[in-house]
Image 1 (cartoon, helix red, strand yellow):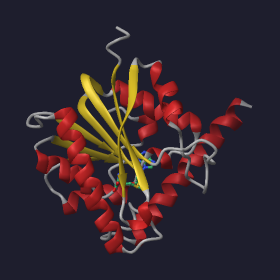
Image 2: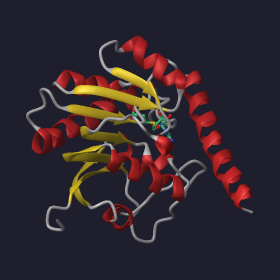
Image 3: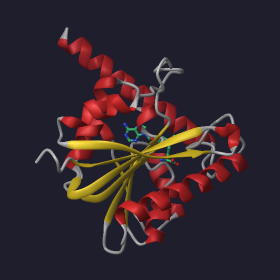
Length: 228
Ligand SMILES: C[S@@+](CC[C@H](N)C(=O)[O-])C[C@H]1O[C@@H](n2cnc3c(N)ncnc32)[C@H](O)[C@@H]1O
Protein backbone atom coordinates (compact mmCIF):
# COMPACT_ATOMS: atom_id res chain seq x y z
CA UNK A 1 0.00 0.00 0.00
CA UNK A 2 2.76 2.43 1.04
CA UNK A 3 4.73 1.49 -2.09
CA UNK A 4 1.63 2.10 -4.23
CA UNK A 5 1.23 5.60 -2.75
CA UNK A 6 4.96 6.35 -3.25
CA UNK A 7 4.81 5.24 -6.90
CA UNK A 8 1.70 7.29 -7.51
CA UNK A 9 3.37 10.50 -6.27
CA UNK A 10 6.59 9.69 -8.13
CA UNK A 11 4.67 9.16 -11.38
CA UNK A 12 2.83 12.44 -11.02
CA UNK A 13 6.16 14.23 -10.58
CA UNK A 14 7.58 12.50 -13.65
CA UNK A 15 4.49 13.53 -15.59
CA UNK A 16 4.87 17.15 -14.56
CA UNK A 17 8.51 17.13 -15.63
CA UNK A 18 7.66 15.53 -18.98
CA UNK A 19 4.97 18.15 -19.49
CA UNK A 20 7.40 21.05 -18.86
CA UNK A 21 10.17 19.48 -20.92
CA UNK A 22 7.82 19.34 -23.89
CA UNK A 23 6.78 22.94 -23.41
CA UNK A 24 10.38 24.16 -23.38
CA UNK A 25 11.33 21.90 -26.33
CA UNK A 26 8.41 23.32 -28.36
CA UNK A 27 9.38 26.93 -27.69
CA UNK A 28 13.09 27.06 -26.78
CA UNK A 29 13.65 30.76 -27.46
CA UNK A 30 10.28 32.35 -26.90
CA UNK A 31 8.22 33.57 -23.96
CA UNK A 32 5.30 31.15 -24.36
CA UNK A 33 6.83 28.03 -22.77
CA UNK A 34 7.20 29.60 -19.33
CA UNK A 35 4.14 31.81 -19.82
CA UNK A 36 0.57 31.32 -20.96
CA UNK A 37 0.09 29.02 -23.96
CA UNK A 38 -3.14 30.78 -24.98
CA UNK A 39 -1.19 33.96 -25.74
CA UNK A 40 1.28 34.91 -28.46
CA UNK A 41 4.96 35.42 -27.80
CA UNK A 42 4.47 39.20 -27.83
CA UNK A 43 1.60 39.11 -25.32
CA UNK A 44 3.64 36.84 -23.02
CA UNK A 45 6.65 39.14 -23.35
CA UNK A 46 4.56 42.21 -22.45
CA UNK A 47 3.02 40.35 -19.49
CA UNK A 48 6.52 39.42 -18.28
CA UNK A 49 7.51 43.12 -18.41
CA UNK A 50 4.43 44.00 -16.32
CA UNK A 51 5.32 41.30 -13.79
CA UNK A 52 8.94 42.50 -13.68
CA UNK A 53 7.80 46.06 -12.90
CA UNK A 54 5.53 44.87 -10.07
CA UNK A 55 8.19 42.52 -8.71
CA UNK A 56 10.85 45.23 -8.74
CA UNK A 57 8.53 47.48 -6.74
CA UNK A 58 7.88 44.70 -4.18
CA UNK A 59 11.60 43.91 -3.87
CA UNK A 60 12.42 47.58 -3.43
CA UNK A 61 9.92 47.89 -0.61
CA UNK A 62 10.90 44.66 1.19
CA UNK A 63 14.50 43.76 0.33
CA UNK A 64 16.47 46.90 -0.60
CA UNK A 65 19.38 47.49 -0.69
CA UNK A 66 20.05 44.55 -3.03
CA UNK A 67 23.85 44.60 -3.41
CA UNK A 68 25.48 41.61 -1.78
CA UNK A 69 22.18 39.84 -1.07
CA UNK A 70 21.55 36.32 -2.32
CA UNK A 71 18.39 35.50 -4.28
CA UNK A 72 17.01 32.14 -5.40
CA UNK A 73 14.62 32.10 -8.38
CA UNK A 74 12.88 28.77 -7.70
CA UNK A 75 11.37 27.26 -10.87
CA UNK A 76 13.25 29.77 -13.01
CA UNK A 77 12.35 28.34 -16.43
CA UNK A 78 14.68 29.92 -19.00
CA UNK A 79 15.91 32.45 -16.45
CA UNK A 80 14.33 35.77 -17.48
CA UNK A 81 13.55 36.75 -13.89
CA UNK A 82 16.86 35.42 -12.52
CA UNK A 83 18.63 37.76 -14.92
CA UNK A 84 16.33 40.62 -13.90
CA UNK A 85 17.30 40.01 -10.24
CA UNK A 86 20.99 39.95 -11.15
CA UNK A 87 20.63 43.25 -12.98
CA UNK A 88 19.01 44.73 -9.86
CA UNK A 89 22.17 43.83 -7.93
CA UNK A 90 21.36 40.47 -6.33
CA UNK A 91 23.75 37.55 -6.26
CA UNK A 92 21.20 35.47 -8.22
CA UNK A 93 20.74 31.70 -8.57
CA UNK A 94 18.03 30.04 -10.67
CA UNK A 95 16.85 26.44 -10.33
CA UNK A 96 14.42 24.37 -12.36
CA UNK A 97 13.79 20.62 -12.69
CA UNK A 98 13.69 20.90 -16.46
CA UNK A 99 17.24 20.37 -17.80
CA UNK A 100 16.41 21.92 -21.18
CA UNK A 101 15.20 25.13 -19.55
CA UNK A 102 18.31 25.36 -17.36
CA UNK A 103 20.61 24.79 -20.35
CA UNK A 104 18.77 27.49 -22.29
CA UNK A 105 19.02 29.86 -19.31
CA UNK A 106 22.79 29.27 -19.05
CA UNK A 107 23.26 29.98 -22.76
CA UNK A 108 21.09 33.06 -22.76
CA UNK A 109 22.17 34.60 -19.45
CA UNK A 110 25.76 33.63 -18.61
CA UNK A 111 26.07 35.56 -15.34
CA UNK A 112 23.64 34.06 -12.81
CA UNK A 113 24.23 30.55 -11.45
CA UNK A 114 21.70 28.06 -12.84
CA UNK A 115 21.17 24.58 -11.43
CA UNK A 116 18.89 21.67 -12.20
CA UNK A 117 16.89 20.90 -9.03
CA UNK A 118 13.48 19.50 -8.21
CA UNK A 119 11.84 21.81 -5.66
CA UNK A 120 10.20 18.84 -3.95
CA UNK A 121 13.72 17.60 -3.05
CA UNK A 122 15.55 20.92 -2.83
CA UNK A 123 18.89 20.71 -1.02
CA UNK A 124 21.26 23.48 -2.08
CA UNK A 125 23.17 23.66 1.24
CA UNK A 126 22.69 27.41 1.22
CA UNK A 127 20.30 29.94 2.74
CA UNK A 128 19.06 32.88 0.67
CA UNK A 129 18.09 36.42 1.61
CA UNK A 130 15.29 36.34 -0.95
CA UNK A 131 13.49 33.42 -2.61
CA UNK A 132 11.23 34.30 -5.52
CA UNK A 133 8.92 31.78 -7.13
CA UNK A 134 6.81 33.01 -10.01
CA UNK A 135 3.92 31.04 -11.48
CA UNK A 136 5.49 27.84 -10.18
CA UNK A 137 3.56 26.62 -7.13
CA UNK A 138 0.38 26.54 -9.17
CA UNK A 139 2.19 23.91 -11.26
CA UNK A 140 2.97 21.76 -8.19
CA UNK A 141 -0.45 20.15 -8.25
CA UNK A 142 0.04 17.38 -5.73
CA UNK A 143 -0.84 18.70 -2.22
CA UNK A 144 1.90 16.71 -0.45
CA UNK A 145 4.49 17.97 -2.96
CA UNK A 146 3.26 21.54 -2.53
CA UNK A 147 3.74 21.32 1.27
CA UNK A 148 7.15 19.70 0.77
CA UNK A 149 8.25 22.59 -1.50
CA UNK A 150 7.13 25.18 1.06
CA UNK A 151 9.08 23.33 3.78
CA UNK A 152 12.20 23.35 1.58
CA UNK A 153 11.80 27.08 0.99
CA UNK A 154 11.65 27.62 4.78
CA UNK A 155 14.84 25.55 5.19
CA UNK A 156 16.64 27.63 2.51
CA UNK A 157 15.62 31.02 3.91
CA UNK A 158 18.09 33.23 5.81
CA UNK A 159 16.87 34.32 9.27
CA UNK A 160 15.72 37.77 8.11
CA UNK A 161 14.93 36.61 4.58
CA UNK A 162 11.70 36.81 2.60
CA UNK A 163 9.93 34.55 0.13
CA UNK A 164 8.04 36.24 -2.69
CA UNK A 165 5.33 34.13 -4.33
CA UNK A 166 3.57 35.28 -7.49
CA UNK A 167 0.47 33.22 -8.24
CA UNK A 168 -3.21 33.64 -8.94
CA UNK A 169 -4.82 32.87 -5.59
CA UNK A 170 -7.93 30.72 -5.35
CA UNK A 171 -10.97 32.82 -4.51
CA UNK A 172 -13.90 31.58 -2.37
CA UNK A 173 -16.10 29.22 -4.38
CA UNK A 174 -13.51 28.77 -7.11
CA UNK A 175 -12.33 25.28 -8.12
CA UNK A 176 -8.79 24.38 -7.07
CA UNK A 177 -7.84 22.40 -10.17
CA UNK A 178 -9.04 23.78 -13.47
CA UNK A 179 -6.66 21.66 -15.59
CA UNK A 180 -4.19 18.82 -15.21
CA UNK A 181 -0.87 19.94 -13.67
CA UNK A 182 -2.54 22.96 -12.04
CA UNK A 183 -3.82 23.65 -8.52
CA UNK A 184 -4.85 27.04 -7.16
CA UNK A 185 -4.64 27.71 -3.41
CA UNK A 186 -6.13 30.39 -1.21
CA UNK A 187 -4.25 32.76 1.09
CA UNK A 188 -5.67 30.82 4.07
CA UNK A 189 -4.19 27.58 2.67
CA UNK A 190 -0.75 29.23 2.35
CA UNK A 191 -1.00 30.59 5.91
CA UNK A 192 -1.97 27.21 7.30
CA UNK A 193 0.86 25.40 5.47
CA UNK A 194 3.54 27.87 6.61
CA UNK A 195 2.59 28.50 10.21
CA UNK A 196 4.36 25.32 11.38
CA UNK A 197 7.62 26.65 9.93
CA UNK A 198 7.25 29.85 11.99
CA UNK A 199 6.52 31.86 8.86
CA UNK A 200 3.80 34.39 8.27
CA UNK A 201 2.18 35.27 4.93
CA UNK A 202 0.91 38.62 3.84
CA UNK A 203 -0.86 39.58 0.63
CA UNK A 204 1.27 42.44 -0.66
CA UNK A 205 0.07 43.40 -4.11
CA UNK A 206 -2.02 42.44 -7.08
CA UNK A 207 -0.84 42.85 -10.67
CA UNK A 208 -3.56 43.09 -13.27
CA UNK A 209 -2.00 42.07 -16.58
CA UNK A 210 -3.16 43.95 -19.67
CA UNK A 211 -3.79 40.57 -21.31
CA UNK A 212 -7.33 39.55 -20.38
CA UNK A 213 -7.14 41.67 -17.19
CA UNK A 214 -5.72 38.54 -15.59
CA UNK A 215 -4.76 39.21 -12.00
CA UNK A 216 -1.75 37.78 -10.20
CA UNK A 217 -1.29 38.01 -6.45
CA UNK A 218 2.03 38.71 -4.80
CA UNK A 219 2.57 37.17 -1.37
CA UNK A 220 5.40 38.05 0.99
CA UNK A 221 6.46 35.44 3.51
CA UNK A 222 8.85 36.05 6.39
CA UNK A 223 9.59 35.10 9.97
CA UNK A 224 6.72 35.57 12.39
CA UNK A 225 8.52 37.87 14.83
CA UNK A 226 5.40 38.14 17.05
CA UNK A 227 5.62 34.39 17.66
CA UNK A 228 9.23 34.31 18.86
C1 LIG B 1 4.88 28.69 -15.63
S1 LIG B 1 6.58 28.25 -15.65
C2 LIG B 1 7.27 29.71 -14.90
C3 LIG B 1 8.74 29.88 -15.20
C4 LIG B 1 9.37 31.18 -14.62
N1 LIG B 1 9.24 31.24 -13.18
C5 LIG B 1 8.73 32.40 -15.27
O1 LIG B 1 7.87 33.02 -14.62
O2 LIG B 1 9.10 32.69 -16.41
C6 LIG B 1 6.68 27.05 -14.32
C7 LIG B 1 8.09 26.53 -14.10
O3 LIG B 1 8.13 25.72 -12.92
C8 LIG B 1 8.98 24.63 -13.16
N2 LIG B 1 8.62 23.58 -12.19
C9 LIG B 1 7.41 23.00 -12.01
N3 LIG B 1 7.47 22.08 -11.02
C10 LIG B 1 8.76 22.09 -10.57
C11 LIG B 1 9.45 21.35 -9.57
N4 LIG B 1 8.85 20.42 -8.83
N5 LIG B 1 10.77 21.61 -9.37
C12 LIG B 1 11.40 22.56 -10.12
N6 LIG B 1 10.81 23.28 -11.09
C13 LIG B 1 9.49 23.04 -11.31
C14 LIG B 1 8.73 24.27 -14.62
O4 LIG B 1 9.77 23.51 -15.20
C15 LIG B 1 8.62 25.66 -15.22
O5 LIG B 1 9.88 26.15 -15.63
